[in-house]
Image 1: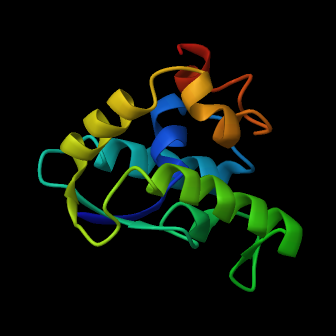
Image 2: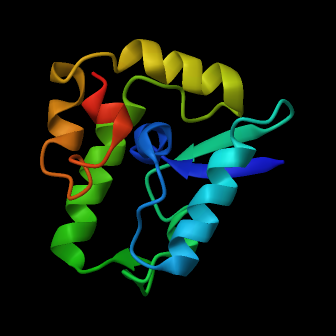
Length: 128
């Protein structure tokens, strides 16, 4: 299986516990979260709509909500992606181990997670 994931979703998936915008989104996020934990899964990185976004009710005309929100989300992606090689196809298990080692404190995710609407429910953020 090959996944395409936004930078900030590498953090979101680690803290996902079944919350989401609607039932369709949660179902897709659960599926992707399970796939990323599978042995043969690979990941391509992006700072644009990905396999998770395709089920998000806020995605309109390839933008997240509106231009301002979309720019903020791209900024979150880019903050994560500065630590990774975006030209590489990663083994998913290796990638998530690498991300966990890079983003291992609340300070390391301050610019990414602080204003996120989900950070009170996110196990990744709460466990830092």
